[in-house]
Image 1 (cartoon, rainbow, N blue to C red):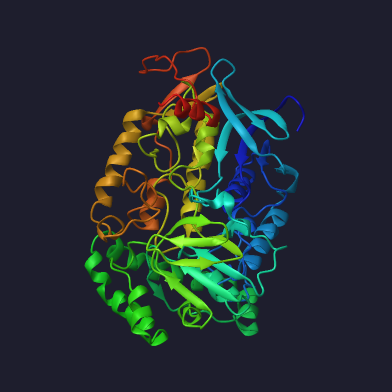
Image 2: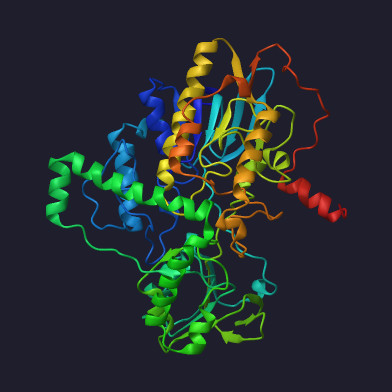
Length: 518
């Protein structure tokens, strides 16, 4: 980046959301953009998560862009290496390489009211942009709980999303913390090689069989020669999941049959009644994400595996101690404890028109207009924003819907002309959020009796979309200018009362407040 580089659009992140945004911008005829990536390669979460056994739990032909079909997926459920290769392929085929800025972590983005653009500070310098599209994604920043004594641990510690491939687990005593989607893939992958594996489980997941197989050469040949066959396959996979949505969002009791199938799956794999009791959830299936595995339960029955039905409470030297008092001597600790989803660190680095950070604006909970824009942050939008997550289908469908919205957002700016910005009206944001939360009340995610990463610190589900992907696509097809204030350089924002801007809440200011007893 040159010292005073200015672009029409700055995209943050090069995972599915960022690369999808870049492709869509080029299709809209916009080439004056950059994609800022903190790492040295594209891929997002599929670059960062390279742990043993890492794979997707959405079928391959549905977990890909509709505008970039891949007839050569090797399996019905693809592994991490194949998905990452697919994203590299997208970057090459659509000519995105000249727009990529690697090793450029965004440290701060600030809306400049006078100059009417975003000032973006990165680890590689600074630039300005008329529009910012934040595609950092919710599964970007690993979450490691604060465990008393972790600083005294004498062995190796790492998170599943930051796997240390230089550390050899063979013959080691390993503690696996957590039983989410990553853990159920890691456990069977490392169990045959480790001396002992101790799994710390706060809440058991519901696990269904993974109907995975190699895609035959004949199928791949057919999809290459007759692309409509791959489209039909994708359509069938999509349709089945659309039909399932009602059970998750309106009639959770209908999930009882699925729950019985999951219990039967557990019973077939685990014969020991005590272990089976530990692994049986006490909440409605679907309240947490339903996990898929054929190898997780069998791995837990092996003689070198211990399941501790209690969370990790503290560490004393090389000893890990659970809340129920169970102790284990280990050489390594692997945290499979998820990500900062409802408290995304990027929010602390976005400073809006009134001097507040996005984290401050979202202090009582994340909320946006149509999962994309936030009041007080002109010409800023996010991909995979609040309440755009899915519990049973492919996030690529939601991303493509948001790309439609992004494209129309930029078109509206072109039509309005001049130095102009769109700022979501607080009333429109509140109205959208109210409708979403009203629909959320009867979903399985809110009524199923579990505590999940879908919920924020206030117990509000700010993560999942309570409807079908078809509904979301309809809601994000076009930008409604009635939901926005149209701002022009040199003119006051209409209908807004100026306020004294609070001090942006950065890490240093938070530390000062804590030290002061605030």
